[in-house]
Image: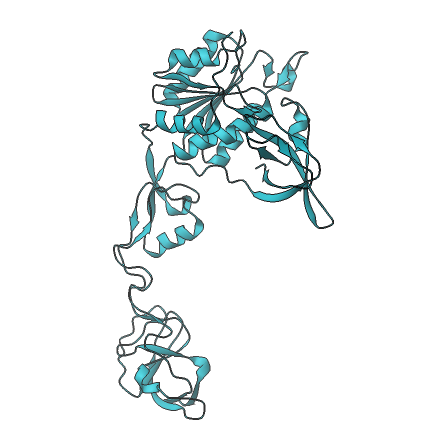
Length: 410
C-alpha cells in the first residue's frame, strides 16, 4: 500500500494557490441592494461630488463669518433675516454683510454665506432681526461641494467585501449596480456503501448521510452554492461517471469519503484519471483529517474530504474555505473567536495541527472551555461541541488554566 506524502497546512495552501492561479473566475452585475457580503470585482469611482451643493450640518443661521467675530453673550451681533432655505429645494438667495438666513440641517447655503451659527446661540428679536451670541469660523458647521466625495474619487477597491456601510456609500453616489464575483457552484458527493439518504432505508450496517447536509450549509456560509448533491456507492465506474459529469457543470467538485488508501477508496484514483493535473495533495498534517485530497480536473478544483463527519468539517474549514476565499473570491466563513480558559490539560500529537472539539461555559464570571472526547465519526462529538481549539504542530498540548483561542462553530 502506498503511504501518504503528507503536506503541512501551510505548504498545502501554497500549492493550492500555485495550481489554481490561472483559474478564470466569472463575474456578474447585481443590484447593490443584493450585494451584501459579496466581493467587488471592480474599482468604483464617483461620478458626482458629494455633496453637490454647499450645505449646513446644523439647524441655524447662515452668515458671513466676519460679521460675527468678537460676539458674545454680553456683546451680541444683530443681523437682518432676509429669508430661509427650504429642505430639498435650491436656494437662490444671496446674503450681504449684516444679513443672514435660516437653514435647516442639510439645507443649501445661500451665496455669500461661509458658515452657520447654531440656533442655540441665537435669539430672534423680530421677524427681520436676530441676535448672534457666539462667533463662528469660516466653513464652521458647513459642508462644501465635494467635501465628502469628489468626482473620480475611488470609493471601493476591487476584491473588497461589500458591507452594509459600503452599500450606503454606493447609493450616495448614484450607483445602482456593481460587478461582483459569481458565487461558485459546487457539486457535493457523499460516497460509501454504507451511506443512505432516507431513514426508511436504514438497515443494519447502514448509516444516514451527514456530510451532505453539513458541508452544503458550510458552503452557503462561505458564500458558495451547493448546486447538486449525490450519494454514491463505493463503485469505481459509477463514481467516475458522476465526477466527470459534475466537472462539466460545476466550479468545484467535493467528494466526502473514499479518500484513504483502502481497496474501495476510489476518490484519488478517479481524480488522477479525470484531471489535467490530477492529484497534487494526498495527505495533510492535520488531526483529524489527514487523508485529504486536492486535485485539478481540467479547470475545476477537486477536493476529497475524509468521510468521518468531524474530519470533514475540520478539513472544510482549513482547505475548502481557504480555496473558496482565495481562488473563487468568496467572503469565506466568519467564525467568532475569543480567549477562554481551559478547565483541564489537553494533549495533542506533535508534528501535525490538532483540532480539539470543545464545549464552552461560564462559571463565577469566568469564560471556560472543556474538551469533548470521542471518535471523529461519533454524532455525539458534534452535538456536544460548541467549537474547537487548535494545537499547533510544534506543541504537545495545553495546560489547565491556560488562555487559548476558542473558535465557535457556525
